[in-house]
Length: 383
Ligand SMILES: Cc1ncc(COP(=O)(O)O)c(C=O)c1O
Image (tube, rainbow, N blue to C red; front, side, top):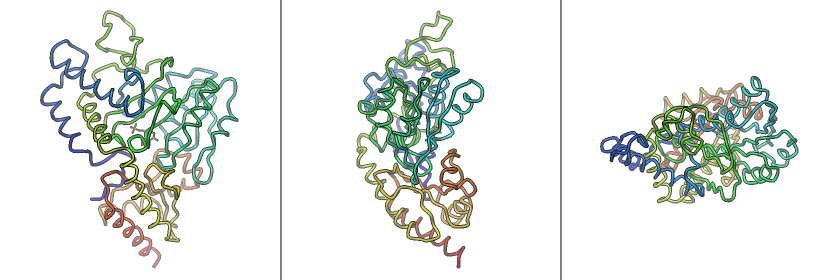
């Protein structure tokens, strides 16, 4: 089997992710922060250890500004629903995932926020100055993805963050695509909030993710409940991370996420990115030569988080992914990828796109097999 759906969730995971999770469940998986007994303390220490690892990876000064969620979607919803009110204006881009678009559109429809969605250029690039031009007195938030989950293009989030900071507007960075292979340095990117999944580039298990909020950013929590802290008090604690961590955490998952980050640190971000770049370049070169194939990802791998998206002339993307799966055991994704405005932009709403998303564990030979399989499909359809 050749797995090329790493943008949805990474597979396989490093061995240490399995072993650390098993060790946790077998030996010390009590409820973190809910007791003073040995195992509860062990669990809490393990959760905080992963918090520290994330802080160090993203250059966040205080790890308590990171709260764990079950995925990036939950983190984005806390950030969006928790920060906006009637009359606020928000700027976002056509390159966003539905996890950003849907909460914003819902608030536009039911909560009276105003929304501006800026368009991209022919490659999906966003010009920060177009964002700047749309800022008005009421602009409260700019929300932008680090990289498109459809064609992999990396957006100029540092410049966009600086524009937001200059105007004292909140900047929400959706780091779902790219974190774990692209350097995300919050000392250089002035993000007010950053949402991340643990199960994609960070190589942790599903059911993990998180939200960073910068000092001074105060959000209303989506959920209230038990935190193990200030239990005598009938309202949600004000302090982080408890404010956003109601209910029992996914301790084994968070431990596995910590092991995923250890693997990334041991291997090196640049080594991971270089390997992915090589695979992406091979895919680009191998597919873009075929006149019946249209590639939508940028030709320069430096601008790409690890995705090649394409269409085959007169063919629905699902037909291509089904062929690759059934005939070659190549696992990739077709359709809209939860990003309808990207398809509107590239005029692929009808066919969707085929998305090949590489991971560190893919090999050159897997990529060569994939290129041959796709070229074979095109040949069979057009002979
Ligand atoms: C850009 C982007 N944002 C948000 C998400 C949502 O991530 P999760 O599935 O962890 O909620 C995804 C998932 O594919 C994504 O690609």
